[in-house]
Amino acid sequence: MVFYLVGLGLGEAKDVAARARDLVKGCSRVYLEAYTSILAGGKEALEAFYGCEILVADREQVEQASDTLLAGAGTCDVALLVVGDPLAATTHTDLYLRAHQLAIPVQVVSNASILSAVGCCGLQLYRYGETVSVPFWQDGWEPTSFCHKINKNLSKNLHTLCLLDIKVKEQSLENLLRGRKIFEPPLYMRVHQAAQQMLEVMRRHREAGAGQAGQQGEGEWLLNEDTPCVGLARVGTPSQYILRGSLKELAESDLGEPLHSLVVCGECHPMEEEALAKLATHFNGKQEQRQKNETGRGVFHIVGLGLGQPGDVTVKGLEIIKKCRQVFLEGYTSIMDGGVEAMEVLFGRKVTVADREMVEQRSDDILQGTRSGDVALLVVGDPLGATTHTDLVVRALDENIPVNIVHNASILNAVGCCGLQLYSFGETVSIPFWQDGWEPDSFYDKICSNLDEGWHTLCLLDIKVKEQSVKNLMKGRKVYEPPRYMMASQGASQLLEIIKKRTSEGQPTPLTPDHLVMGVARVGSQSQCLKACTLQEMATIDLGGPLHSLVVVGETHPMEDEYVDMFRNSAGCKNPVNLCPPN
Image (cartoon, rainbow, N blue to C red; front, side, top):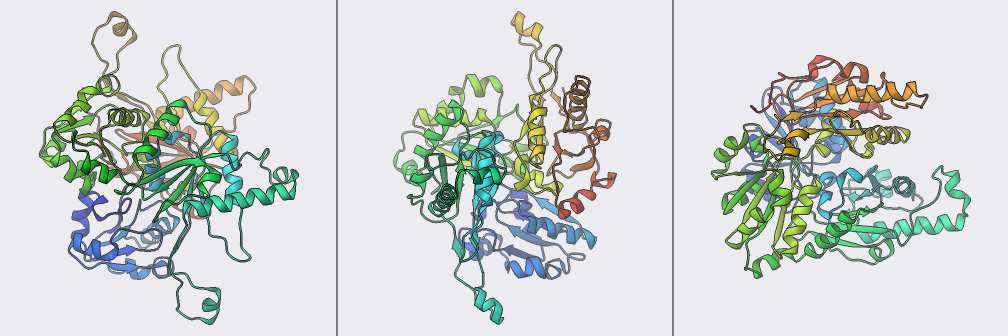
């Protein structure tokens, strides 16, 4: 039988994938991991939703008594429900390893997490550096390393997502020493508390003298009270709140109830500035009330479909789609198993494919439908993972059209399936198809910059859908090339070409042919395939049909090494199939 690790998404029972709902209902035992996040309505809401008993698994059970979770999974299906994405925390990765050691089959159902849903504030997800955690300070324990990591990201003009501390079922030192099972009330760090701790670190830094930053190996100290930041609260819920301001201003803010996150902004593109301003104005915690009161136009829903199976759409998203007057599918930045036909069967609605021209140049064809009712645009992955979709949301807001975002899993968080800690990834890069006379290599420099810091790199591989040749473009002929999807082997080959060229020119090449990489194919599908090997080897390996991604591995923790070792042989690939759509 199977041990299911099921992501619940951002905080409501209906944020779960539609297929996961059915899987959970078929399980003999269902646990809720209840200490790394919180869920609206808690255990009771889930029991009402699934119609079964939910057993709460606390930190002690998950981390020290995992055998009780896995017991029986060899003879019956067992599920562990995790708020967010199930492999975003090392705790759950470790649980996967333990199940693997016991020869228990594990199936992961990914979902949205703040690591991808942070795109709701309009900043480009590719422009984030290392993620940091801001812990509650306690007497005698006031770590400051998170500020040094933020400073390092700023030195590279990168944004920083700061995850704020959660204390659930914690014991005081006295009760711990006395062996008393008495727990403190739960604590959830707010944005203003995190900002205040950062300001205190800066105050101490100034008092310690200008030489401290150099001693820390950080170079110039860039974080200051005027650094632009974004406070996020209750992302993905009807009361979502986005607040922009300086670090000093956010230290005096009140964003209400948890969960909160904080973004420290690096260098912002003008498009990011515009999107942030408009999204912060719209998502002020009162948008649901505004949608109900202003009934002049329907709502523009932008719905994430997840990783590529029709059933990956969330229950919330599915209900919205079925109620919409018009449904469009953005059909050029990714692919979906079964295509439009499979979606129309599941949704019970006609789905109109929106190509690049419609989304980017004729958005009125989509938005004008809100004059007579709700409209949904379906996007594979998370809806705000690409600047194209963020720009469309901004256009809707410019026309005073109410906007609703339904998040879902994307490769940016689902890449946790390879066992590498998501907090240890640096800037995401895109590897484009090379063409005659056009062979850009800036992505290589970004990979090397990540390696200098010990960070992993997620490389997104190019997709060409409904593209015209230069000849047809110049002649004005609407003739399109067959779709192309870059494979991990081709991405590796282009990296090897850059290494060869730079070596011949006498330039340093931190990335070498013998470097460890991971090929990731069809994540989240039944034919998911992962392979760990050298870059040189990856250039010769066939991982099957698209979609592929490539991970360049940075410095690893022993637990990461153990996980990656599972994919050093062909056992990591399960029935690779050709998922290319017909030409």
